[in-house]
Image (cartoon, rainbow, N blue to C red; front, side):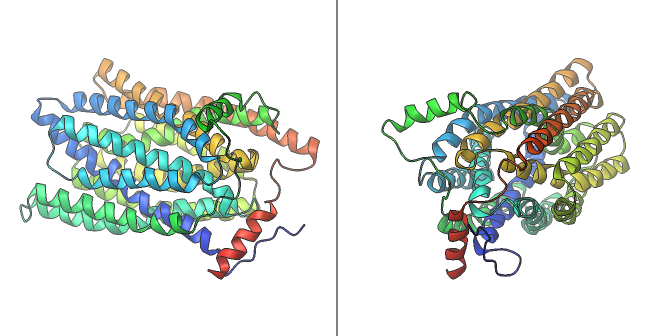
Length: 446
C-alpha cells in the first residue's frame, strides 16, 4: 500500500493551515506571559497587595486554571474522537477564547478580570487539545517532527507581529500619549482578531481521518472509553505510561517558566520595559531553534534530543534560583528561547508516534492532564514556597527537583520504548494510513 503523501513544496495545504493556528493562538500566549501579569499586578496594588503577595495570588489563580483544564481535557478529548466531532469542538473552544481575549481589554475590576481570564485561558487550552490531536490527521509519521516543530516555530515569530504593535501601544501609555484604558482595549482586540484570522482556515479545511464511529448514548460511551483506555490492550502501553509520568515532571519546568516569567521578574523588581523586550527576544530566538529541532529530529533520534532539552531546562531552573539582576533575566530569556520550542514540539510529536492513531483525541487529552497537572503542581509549589519564605528565588528550587526527576524517568521510558521497537522491529505508528494520503491529495486539489 502506497502511503506517501503528494506534496507541493515543503508542506501540504492542510499542514500549512494547521501551522497557521499556532501563529494565531500564540499571540494570546504572549499576552498571558507579559501584559496580563502587568495588569493584574496593577489591580492587586490597588487592593493593597505587596509584590510577593501578588506573586502568590497569581500563582494560585494559574494553578486553579491548570487544574480545571486537567480535569476537562481528557473528557473533551474523548468526545473529539467520535466521527466528525473534532472540528466543531475545536472551533467552539477557540471562538470562546477569542471573545474572552477581546473582553480582557475592558476596564474590569480585579474579580471580574480574573473570572474572564479563567474562562478565556481554559477555552484556549481546551482548543489546544483538539489542535494537537489534529496533528495525526494532517500529516504522516515521517513528517510529524517537522510539522510539530514548524507549528511552534511560526507561532513564536508570527505572534511577534501583534506583540510588537502591542508594545508600541503600551509604550505610548507609559509616556501618557495614550490612556491605559484605550491602549489595553486596542491591544486585546487586536490580538483577538489576529487569533480569529488564523483559526478560520484550519476550521474550514480540516478533515478528521482517525475516529471512532458514533454510537448511541455517546456521552456515556465517551466516559467508558476514557476510563478504559489503559485497561485495553494497546501497543507499547508501558512505554506510554512511563513517558506520561516523565512528561508530568519535566514539562512542569517549561510551563511554569513560561507562565510565571513576567510575574517572577516583577516580584524581583525588574523594569517592566526590560521584561517585555526580554520576552520578545525569547520569541525571536525560539523561532529558528524550534525549526532546527525539527531538522535535527530527521537526523537524530528525537528521544535523545528531548533528553538534551530537558537537561538544558534543568540548568535554567538552577540558574534562576540566583537571579537578582536585569542582565541575568536577559540571559534567562535567551536560554529559554533556545530550548522551549524544541522540548514542546518534540514532546508532542514523540507522543504522536507512540499512541494509537484512532484514539489521538483521548490520548492527547490524557497528555494534557499530565501537562496541566504538572503546571498546577509547579505554580502551586512556587506560591507555597514564596509565601513561606517571602523570597521569589526560592520558589524555583522545587521546580529544579521535579525537572531532574523527570529527566531520569524520561530516560527510563525512552529505553522501554526502544526495547519495544527492537522486539517488534518497528515503531508503534511507522506509517500513516491510506486515508491520510487520500485526504492530503484531495487538499492539494482545493
